[in-house]
Length: 238
Image 1 (cartoon, helix red, strand yellow):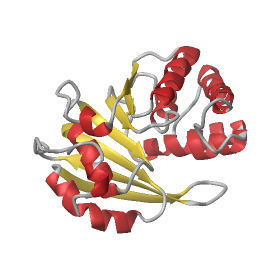
Image 2 (cartoon, rainbow, N blue to C red):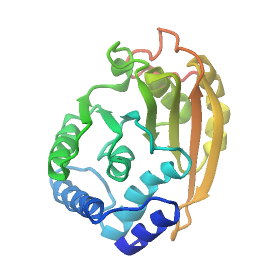
Image 3 (tube, rainbow, N blue to C red):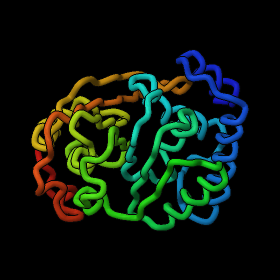
């Protein structure tokens, strides 16, 4: 996907990018490649693939969810900033908190935010399990997002405790969404969630499967969740 395709395909979806925003994506790409030589941030480094598989793929959440309103968003395990930073560039008014367990990734993100002059972003070095038990953040976010971090039953325990009642959890998945949803139904219910919709589509040009699962937070998460670090992964609620 070249820059022109990136711009025109987003415009078709009603997302118009200014020259300044396009320059921010370009700077993001350059910074990602530069830092990737020092540390492993992504296996995808050629420009067309980064624009398609990282930038466009991240922003695809906005095809099914309205980011035009003021929102407080948390991105769990964002790695090199996906999906929340590409969304933040497209929708500058949103407030983004990224939590990641690797400090070197947090260093990259802090540097990136400076390079791009992003405001309303914060980066926190923590495990999702302990972050979700921190009362300063628990049930404080309008939207919590995660992209391909873990299977849905695990992800639900890490993300839903952070969503305020009435808020939304957006899980971005490649294949196996239906299968994961079946296995994760119990966890979703226990954590206070209710599946609203599943949107399935093909990523343009390469036509690979994508799924966006929208889960509403309908009641508070029991205090015991998330459990201690490592426990959700070892023994998921299924």
